[in-house]
Image 1 (cartoon, rainbow, N blue to C red):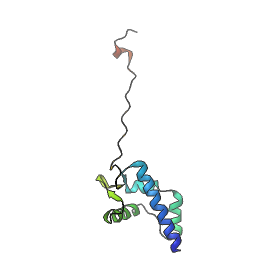
Image 2: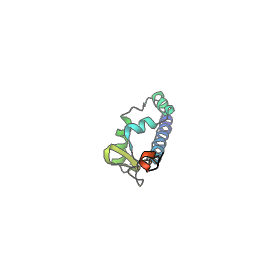
Image 3: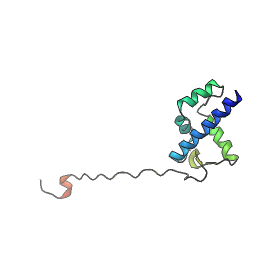
Image 4: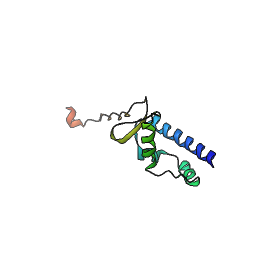
Length: 106
């Protein structure tokens, strides 16, 4: 069973890193939500369920140990060396101007 557990935690780590690489800094509960359902089921099967509090606890330990994870502002976590916060998309300009405001005669 130890080999199964080791493989499981490697898969969890890869899924967490993939979510961080895609999203930038992520809150722990969002990381839990991003984990594949199959991993959550596997965790229960091997006796190590992934609860919503697991990511925060584990990531705090990883950050404290200097294992490539950093805690960013607002309780978010990111991979060391990646941007701490993913930029928000720029709002789209509303290019539709009503004829009354454009000065055109209707």
